[in-house]
Image 1 (cartoon, rainbow, N blue to C red):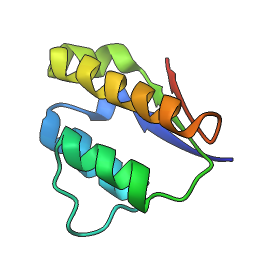
Image 2 (cartoon, helix red, strand yellow):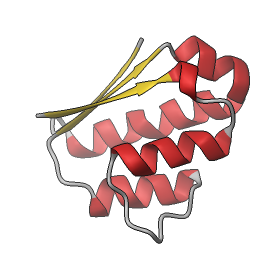
Image 3 (cartoon, rainbow, N blue to C red):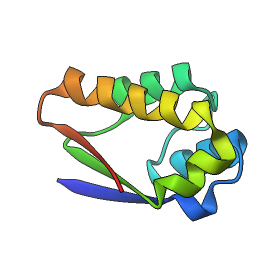
Image 4 (cartoon, one colour):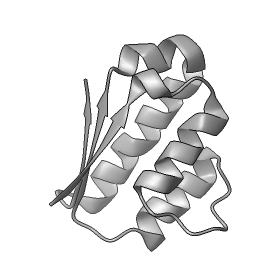
Length: 91
């Protein structure tokens, strides 16, 4: 299983979050940099199995507020969708 590590200390706003995700997950150029596009790319364009480890989440939460929680919710739904082929760890 491929592991991708996201460091919450690097995330200062929504745009930065999506740029980091795009780069780390090799999303296509047309990635829309929003939660709907994140769902689409993870469920259609991303090779599984995959694990995302979001370290230092509390720093992301400070900058993103509720959007950080919404992103984690979406990642949890992707985890349910792929049943063992996709994992997310929030640290």
